[in-house]
Length: 125
Image: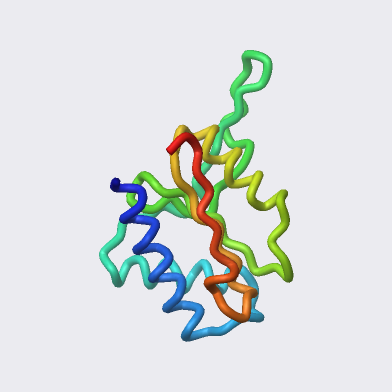
């Protein structure tokens, strides 16, 4: 499945960034470095992807912005927080539903071991 392959590549790129930088920086630093790593790996991505919301028949065109969309199929939400809460996972699931995407990856770079800060969020896979 394409989404799973892309998610695997994104996670590998995030591990490389975390290996080089470690925890403790601001989210923006990790986002910039992850984009560089995705480029080096030949992956196509968009940043600050607008997510529209329909509310009572009206579309709010830019209600939210997702951090990354990789290869047009995997949404990536980045964090640099002490602890990932259920609200962070719900946020990504909402983005997935609103964009019609099936797979997202939530990455918290403020983890001692990055594997403990990576969460796959699925929407109907």
